[in-house]
Image (tube, rainbow, N blue to C red; front, side, top):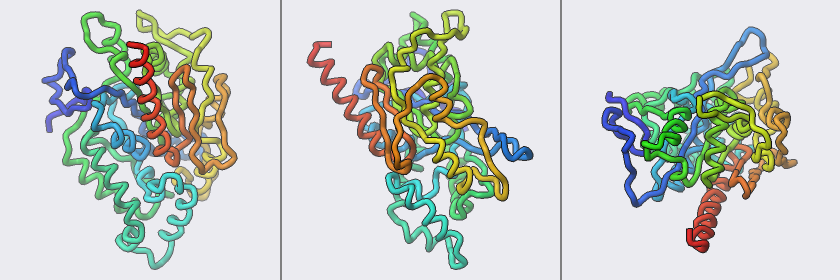
Length: 363
C-alpha cells in the first residue's frame, strides 16, 4: 500500500506532500502528539525486562469525535515513528468512562466464569461495544494501519478474540507517516516554511503507559510545549501523558542542542495524572501484572512529576475524574480514561472562551 502522511488530518500520499501543503480554509488546526513507545521497562520481576504497551485510544477518540467537524488534525510522535495501540485500553470496562473504576473488576469476574462466552458477554454490554466500535472507526479514519500491542498474561479474556479481529481490520488500511517533533520545530523556525505552531488552537496527547517511555525529560517535547505556550496554543494531557511536563525543564537551542530552562513558567501549574495508588492497583490486579510475581515499573508518573518540582492536583477518589487547568499556561490535565469526556468538554469551553476574548480585544 502507498505510504501516506498525517498532515492537517488529511491522508495524502507522501510523495504529494510538500512544505507548502495548505489546509482547507474552513477548518481550524490542532496537533495530536502520540507516544511511540512500544515496550515498557520493568524493574520487577527480574526475569521480565519489559511488557508490550501503547497508547489508549479511548483517551484520543473522544477528542477526534468532538472536534473533527471543525478541525484538521496534524499527527506527530516524539521521534516520528509509528505509535502502537494498547489492546488493553480496548477493554469494554474502559468504555464506561466515569464508571470504569466500578466496572473493571465486575466485568473481569464475568469473564472468569465457566459459562463465559464472548458473544453473550458482548451482548450484555451493547452500549460499551458501540462506543468501542465508534472509536475504532475514528482510528481507521485518522491513523490508518498501526501495530497493536501483544496480549499479556493478565489481559482480559474478551480481548484475546477482539485483538485478532482488530488486527485484521487495521491490516487492510494504508500506513500513515507521522511527523517528528524535531521536524515540526525546525519547520516552525524556517522563515521560508509557512508552517507555524501559531496556527494550532490546541495540542492533545493521550495516555496509556506509552508516554512513560518517551514523554519524560524529552527536550524536543519540552521545546514543543514551550513553543505552544508562547504561541497561545492550549495544551491537553491525560492519564500518563502529563509526565510530559517534566520535559519543560529543557529546551532546544538554534543549533539543535538541549539546554536547561531557568524560571520555568510551567511550574505554575498543578498537574492531574494517574496516581501511584492507582498504578499499584493495576500492577497487582490488572493487565500489567506478571502472574505470580511482584510487578513494578521503573518509576511512578505522579512521583516523577512531583520530583520535577510540580504540584499535584489530587482526589481522595482515584476512580473519579479529576481535571486541573492553569489558565496562564492554557494547560489542561486529567487523571485517566474516566476523565476523557469531561476533559474534552473542558477543552471545548477553553477554546470558545479564548476565541471570545480575542474577538473582544480585536485580535
